[in-house]
Amino acid sequence: MTNLKKNMFSKGQIIFGFFFAVVFCVIIIMTYKKDAELHKKHYKGIVWILLAFVSFIASIAAIKFILGY
Image (cartoon, rainbow, N blue to C red; front, side):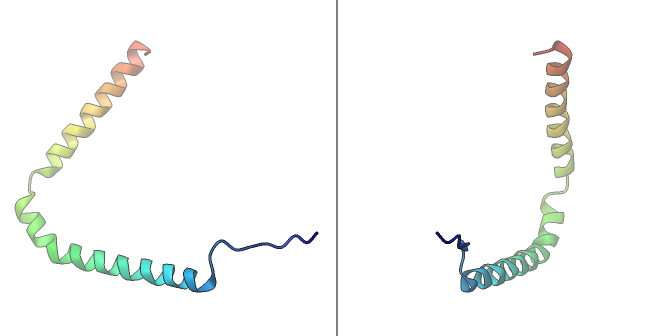
């Protein structure tokens, strides 16, 4: 009985996956840079919302830890 190692992906699939990931990342970066100015304009106070959300979750975790549930 031979013990042959079978690859899950062919060489062509691996090459396609690599190039797809690279092109996808480049497109995402280009889109982000294009929209960065709009984000600065329209989402000025979003950091405070994020801070409130994180502190709310942290307070729930602290209450759970203190009360021992």
